[in-house]
Image 1: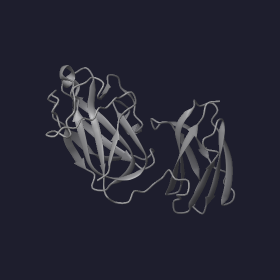
Image 2: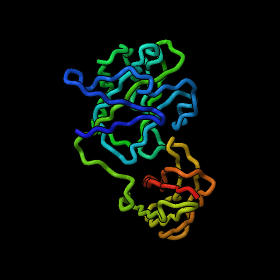
Image 3: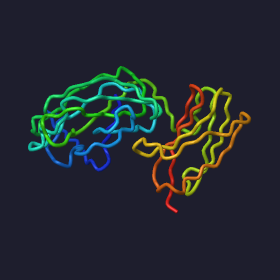
Length: 250
């Protein structure tokens, strides 16, 4: 079974292995994600909240999700008690997986976490974990998250040779410095729209493609954005495509 290990920016997860406790988690302050202030969620339905956002870079079929609650002895009260999980294929339309509860972590080095849910092959690229209650602490957090994958073949969305239904898209140059060109070949009905999102899933640029003809090219300038990793999302009718973007420094 394949496993994705993911952590939030500025987190420093430490994975320990032992003969008796292969999935145990340590009690270090640096081994976890903690939020003490709410922020606008990438899922507009969640509003201002505490949230952890994951972008796998491609669409995967998920299996079991395992979470280690906040295991720092003096901060255990800030561990999650209840939380919501939302997921999305394109980072725009979100679906609710469910509401979940976790036990408080023991604050010991032999803590093995909990299996929260089995996704049973559900395909997704983006996941948001939104804590809604804790054990009385001033902040909220957890120590580690593990997403297991099924043995099914994954569906990639970041390969430039992968197209979807009636959409065919090329993006060049990529990486780029100030702008890139969209080359869209489409037999889909409806208006073709594009969005550029940052690593938090926030839309930083959006627009629509020219309406005339099945073959359309458009230059998109992003020189007002900082260098970094972005994602391009094209939607037309019920069809959609995503591409990774890399903007280099000038």
